Image (cartoon, rainbow, N blue to C red):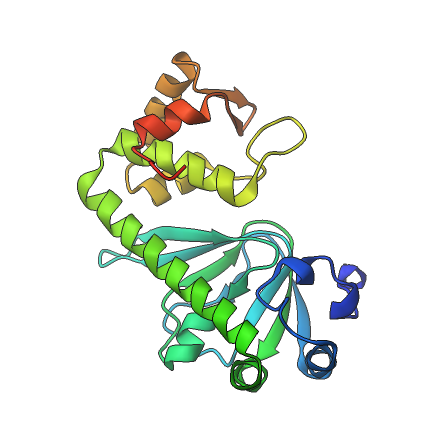
Length: 235
């Protein structure tokens, strides 16, 4: 499996869509000398909440979920990560412990960039620094939306929005279904409700011809109406 990991960032398709795309050839050579690449099986941990990390992961291939532990010991999925995403940068920049755990949702290849590499690029490449600032602002805005949604939206509204978030993050597979293997429990975790409630609401969405179940996968039939239900005005 490790042979699937590209030896060079210059030939990595994922690199072209990552936050590292602003780096120059000489800087890529620096990454090549310093990075390490790892393979994670489904369910394995990339980062642990509360720990200290000394670098960031760039997801080459695969999908991850980012979770935070609640006061009652229940995990809450706060967002997902996919190919090209930088994972763990916020706590590295702030000097704080890792604020969330990261788990592989499927077989995942990720390249690890040590802290000194990231800080070198921040200091020497303004375009990269600006992209990282934009990413931080986006993540902060998304976190604010999660807080607002949990406080003000109904479970039905939150579920509709979560389905659209999953769609916008991972897209569709060749059958038009959400291009990620995600359980009803994980959806309920992100919505912030019981699994039984999500199963009931998904059945209602199916009866209303908003979604279609294909085995364990979900196909969104009417994204516009889901956006209306979820009060997602920027969809």
